[in-house]
Image (cartoon, rainbow, N blue to C red; front, top):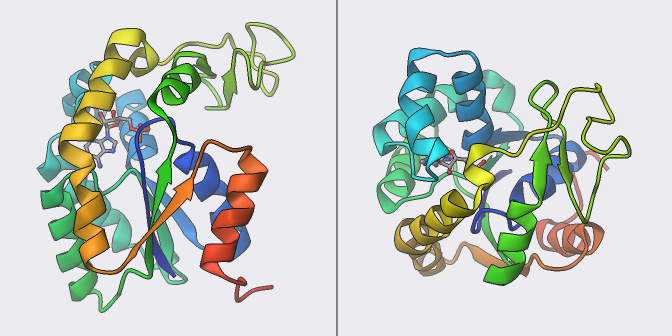
Length: 218
Ligand code: AMP
């Protein structure tokens, strides 16, 4: 099964992708996670991406397309994949279409998660992350038991630079200008399903599972 998860930053698509990847036995490919890993490892790609990411801007298409092309060549995606945070521009969606043709694959569905803007801002501005094990928390909705420390590994939690107020505003503007056009792009292809992402994680997931159907492994 080949899926794309669309939606503004903070709609919870990464959380839903994690759950669906486990239940359906498919891989989650998050360009945000791949880029953050490259930044942490200070690879040439990471060094190029960092400035864009810190300010909430998109990393250039050529960089991200190359990254996804490389990941899709990996045979561990044989059962399928969920693309989380890719494509984010029309040229990325067109590049994805050609990679899929090259690999004789079809997209099964594109899920568009929708959450009101003020809720997204609240989710992103309260998010805290562990720089060591990458666990994420929320000051109000999912606080760490340890206060400012990670429950899993004890490291001091940080606020991602792109979760700071100004970067959040930029990310939401970039989403409206560059990513939202993908909704009609995929709607025209008959691939799009809208899901309300503002409910509890388990409720959203149960609606998602209804759309995706019974896992083959169940
Ligand atoms: P995310 O974790 O998906 O919100 O991504 C974090 C940041 O990584 C974004 O704000 C962008 O700077 C960069 N990024 C992630 N995916 C893409 C993409 N498909 N195209 C361009 N930049 C991306």
